[in-house]
Amino acid sequence: MRNIYLIISFILVSVFAFGQSANFSTDLTNNDNCGGTIVTFTIDDTTGINTYNWSFGNGEVDAGGTISPTDSGSASSSYMVFGAFTVELTVNGNISTTQIISIFNSPDPSFVINNGDACLNGVHTVSFDYTGTGTSYGGTVNRWKWNFGDSMYSYIQNPS
Image 1 (cartoon, helix red, strand yellow):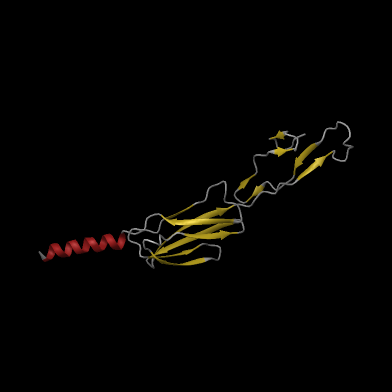
Image 2 (spheres, one colour; image 1 turned 90 degrees about the horizontal axis):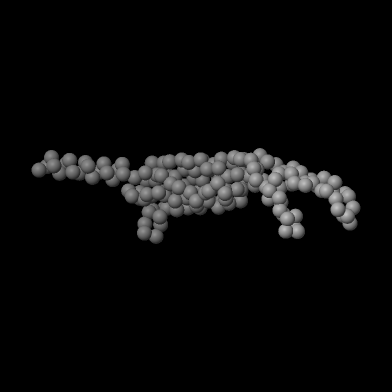
């Protein structure tokens, strides 16, 4: 009987000691993770987790706390510049997981008006050249929408 009790105790201790993980997810999508964004991090499964703390890779840390019905371990951090950031979640003091998140630079929508010095009291052909920075961290500009203010739109890079 004592051996059975020891085996059951070992199994229970193993489940509780090794059952937790430090996996987490974010609310980032490829459409909204430009500089100047707040990212929320969520622990995927709090089973077996007692304590947690976060390091966001941008100089901010969250001292964490204790998992409870009112504290799920979620945290948020602001990313004001673009780049790759290594985020680390540590649970129960010694189990950690890292993820790299990418915050993109907002594109620079600069343009040049060609033949723009012509007199505007007649019909003239005017063209526009997109001169903004097309290489943002993590991607390039590949779609354009020009609104000329007269209900006319163009979706090409350099309209005329």
